[in-house]
Image (cartoon, rainbow, N blue to C red; front, side, top):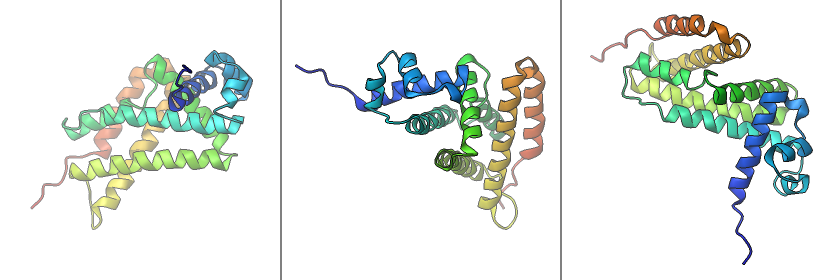
Length: 200
């Protein structure tokens, strides 16, 4: 009997090879041929799932975003809000080998997205999903201010995401500064997340 091929699983394995290659050598080295070698497949086998480099990159960008979202979803939200938020940010930072590789790939994608609208659209979609989830959680924790608490929580979510992106970049090129950067994270969260206003 012919062996059943799980198409989604095959695509994810190839996407993971793109992320490894992008992290180790940069996006200039990503091609159907090099990805095939990294994934232990023939170029023809890769092209059964992805016809072009752009298709490979688009899927890998989605996969990288999905991994970040999964780690964030696994964070215990019953923690005190500032502690939970710190844990959420840490879930996105390159503080171990796997996340360092993903962050390097994400940086490469972000750089390429500046000149490739399709990849930029994928990045914005991932960012928007994370922003809305984070903003909703902040609202549920009572951190909205002013006449429109929901909009305020989304603005706060944008600030947290900017903080996370900046720390991730610094940790990529200055990993020895980890302790100082994590202290900076704590100081920033203290400023961004004062105690919530009690409901009357």
